[in-house]
Length: 114
Length: 109
Image (cartoon, rainbow over all chains, first blue to last red; front, side):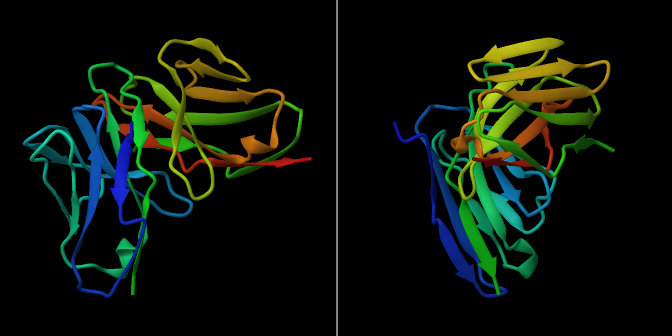
């Protein structure tokens, strides 16, 4: 049981480049989300999805796109990378059927934008 | 606005007890979570409180007072492996999680 798998673990981009962070889960969770984590700040929600074909914006969606074509996959696209997007990104999934909706996180992707 | 406050850093001794506090001001309340995050790793779930009182789970306990907007995580019999950041998160009225910046706990021998 792999849980939540994120790739790549590390990535360096130049300003203006685009890239996709991949996220896959094998727990049949309906809820999936992307967070960024920056020093001294709490996790901030970028985008989330409550099921295949449904996505919504979180707190900091600008500069990012998502899609949810299957229950398992939830990729995050950076359209034109900026230094302000240097961060650690976490994908998380949850069993939304329970009120607690405990999240299972991927290992994280450390992105540096030069 | 919505706000979660936690101490930035705490230090404790192996074998001792430590209490990590969390205060919150959010639009609505649908539960409070504690997660543990070791350096360079992903957060992992520790506890969930939605009713007032103490929830005990092994060496870890979590307390909630909704009227005071306050929670704490109590760690007993501290071990070196408990050195980590502890994240407090509140689920608001829209069922969105609001996260604190985390408390870095340093355990000394």
